[in-house]
Length: 232
Image (tube, rainbow, N blue to C red; front, side, top):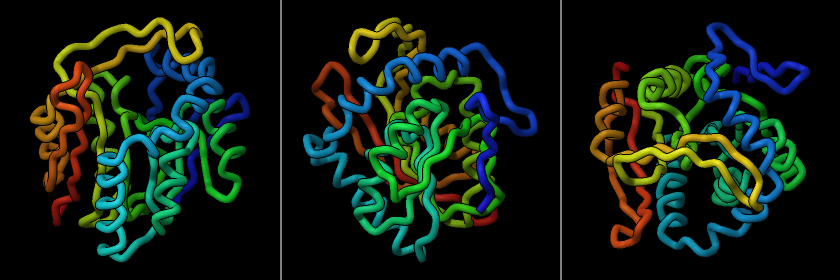
């Protein structure tokens, strides 16, 4: 499997790497809140039975496809990576924030975590069996999503399953204060499941399932499960 290239300053490097301001803002923001965010999410899955069920289904699909390395992209402090590992999945994590990766390595020393960007994914073609983006596309602008999904398509093995989790809605907002009251500067983009499905299909994926969580709540979430369409 290809490694994610990391510079000494913690930034990623690779052909055509994007240096957009929103990437710098996102990295800096999550470096700032890393400790508080890790505390907030560390046991969060224990309170989310429907999300655990979606992850269990994803793990079953990985096993049914023959297993292999599974990329948790935008892994944060690694709690979902570790959960997948407990389900028997050969999961590894990558995140834009070096501080998040440091915490993930501390909390889960037996697992692999690297610094990397979804906009310039430094993994070899066809090198992963499956891929997870668990509420990690929410800060990526609409016009960049196709680039990210093209990277997903490129690194996946034929037929590889994908799970994407996201906030449901049709608005974006600028988040200026985050976990622990620390300053942040990130846009949070909410998307309709039909829009995310259309992006996936345009990128060469077949959408298999759609689940909406808390549809009667003020901030519902959704999970899409798809697979790379044969021939793509």
